[in-house]
Amino acid sequence: MTTEGAAPERTLSGTIWSEVDRALSGITASAERAVLDVIVTIPRDEVIRGLKALKADEALAFDYLRCLTCVDNEADGMDVVYHLYSTEKRHNVTVKVHLEANDLFVDTATTVWRAANWYEREAAEMFGVRFRGHPDPRTLLMPEDMTDTFPLRKDHPLAEIEVLQGEGIAWGVEE
Amino acid sequence: MTNALQPSEFEVQDIMINMGPQHPATHGVFRMVLQVDGEIVKDLIPHIGYMHRGAEKLSETMDFRQGIGFMDRTEYLAQFNAELGYVMAVEKLMDIEVPERAQWIRMILCELNRLSSHFMFTGAFGTDAGVFGTSFTYAFRWREEILDLFEEITGDRLMYAYFRPGGLAWEVTDNFEARVRQVLELSKQGIKDIDGLVTNNEIFKARTQGVGVLTKEQAIDWGTTGPVLRASGVQMDIRRDEPYLFYDQVEFDIPIGQNGDVYDRWCLRMEEMRQSVRIVEQCLTKLQPGPIQPERMPRMLRTPPGEVYIRTEAPRGEFGIYMVSKGGNRPHRLKVRSSCFANLQSLRDMSIGQYVADAVLALGSMDIVLCEVDR
Image (cartoon, rainbow over all chains, first blue to last red; front, side):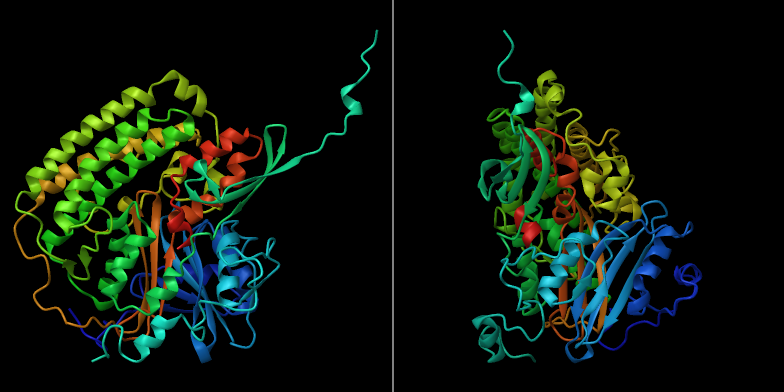
């Protein structure tokens, strides 16, 4: 086993990236290799065009949306993450869209897969990201009137337990 | 004499009915608002969130060992499968090699968990279909045998917290293999009993065939997973498509439905139970003595920065764990991709044009766990 900082070198050769790059012609996408999948980053303005191209491409055929979620990177803004799968070709790719912290909106992916509907509603209420053109922009898990606070953001306090942990009471100070 | 009142003279309008959150047929706290014309469902709006406990946010404050116990509470009918996703995410990020024996035991426990979860389904679904008592009491008797075995190993009937990053918490009991064989024999008997009582029952068939149909295209577009997706004829099982543990070293068949109706989902789960028995039998022949944890494990688990999306085939479908780490001893972000959450979105398509009682059947056929939906 390896320890921190000694992650093995991963290259993109021999991965699905060459196919994705071909399908995304005309879109400025970049890629990196994560532990399991290839992560493709697409600019916000072109994301729906890109996702549609990935779904329509015959060799890729990403017809299945596995998961859609957000990651809060605090000062570095937010990432919207799409996990795609092809039920026919049985391969995966992860698509990321970066949003600036003061400008949180992206076009809805419900026009590509209907499955995006609830995932986007959840991401919207939890992170405050606005999905432009969403057909049903109500809250999903939160109360209907709770639209001004976003619980999964990093700056949102949890409760007393987090305060206790900050003081090193709950489970000991980090070594 | 002519009829004084012609039907066209009545003003006909749809009625909105609220069903739930406290309703025995909604399997927990789930509410749906139905727009009905007589008894036909015209529109259905599901409302979820009554069980939302902020599991994802809480996980961000817990280190990698504390998080395991939380997974049990997220998916309380397939606990081993849920734990597996979490520990595999940590293992992948830290690049830990898991000893063979630990992998085989994990596989045995996950498949037995699938059996117990499907037994639960057969019981609960029977209640939805109007055979209260019969299938429920039978199924729970067999499920209890499996839970007894889990209790012997882990010390708890439901909340196991038995998997650890790297392997298992402790060695299984000495008579583990004999006990598993015993449970398998009982389960085989149970599957046979339920098949005889329900699956081939003409009344049950008449009640469930052609109800809650989901076409192949709808199933993929809504992102449904597991038995719901396979009953609609889609060949997708993560155990075969992207093997984890040692699923590539055992033989098993993946049943596929043809009509995508409620009856197909039932039959598919019955077949999956037989396949689970088959998998566990093969695992037992390959189980060898050996370590259950890597030789050197750090006392405090720390992952390098990175992200991973782990998908495993839980009883209800794909259970995904998306873990983002920025270094340190807890996840920066943990997303639980719940299988029922994905399935529940398709409920509207399944129910429109059907009777209200059939909407209940469609909901039951997804085998929903509201704790997992809301997290």
